Image (cartoon, rainbow, N blue to C red):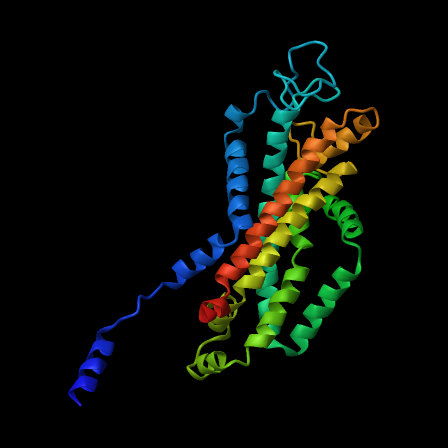
Amino acid sequence: MPGSTRGSDLADDITLPTISPRRMAFDRFVSHRAAVVSVFVMAVLVLFVALSPFTARYGVNEQVQAPPNYFLSPRANAWLGTDDIGRDLYSRLIYGVRVSLVIGLFSGLISVSIGCVIGAVAGFRGGRFDDVVMRVTDLFLAFPFLVTLLVMRNMIGGISWLKPITGELNSVRFIIVLFAIFGWMGVARIVRGQVLALKEREFIEAARAAGASRWYIVRRHLLPNSIGPIMVALTFSIVGAIISESTLAFFGYGPQAGDGATSLGILVGQAKGAVNTGFWHLALFPCLTLVVIALSINFIGDALRDATDPRMQKDS
């Protein structure tokens, strides 16, 4: 019929707007309000840290010139107060955030990279290699993490030929290497589980039939389809490294503070005695900053997981 032919022609002319996967991922990310706020908070922190010569009112070990200057409460010339020897807590907090973020970011990236490679290869190859890798992983995970760090810290720090790689004991580079070496096991288990669930799928079989190599399949198919859990693991690794460094520094095993370096853990550790005498602000602001950083990174990781999950792209 002519009418039906005209209607079908009109239907063929109608084209639905297409949305790119990147646009869909961005829309899913910004739908997480907590993540958007967290991005703003972290951007402000990174900006303050990057511009520390301008945003910090004093040097990291510089004393406030207002005697008596020790244990001052927050005021105009010391916005967050001073410590037991008159150093400005606000300025030291900025320098401490810088060190903690560097340790968390670099150790997290290195440990997640190692865990992704080991977990993907173990899950894809299977067999005896997978059994050996998982038993080694289980062995490390069976020990308390903090105790393992303290023991291996002394063992690795005593090996002289490793110092060009690890740096001096209690240096920032040494702590990054230490956390990277012992932070990949959980990531490897997560990636291995994802690979085991994906390697028998049709698109993997098609890649094998087309003659793709194992490394190509891992790099182009398995890891991209595991990016959601990897993002969550990365945020957990960064936050875990920052908290672990703070724990070590609290007990006196963190970065050396004598050379002008400080961290959130050092600030909390130095304040533990002052809190008992009523100077609560010395511990409150570093602990509050630590909580804000941990929550912000976790919120961003949750949003990135949803934004980069290929299965959610299909459902959208």
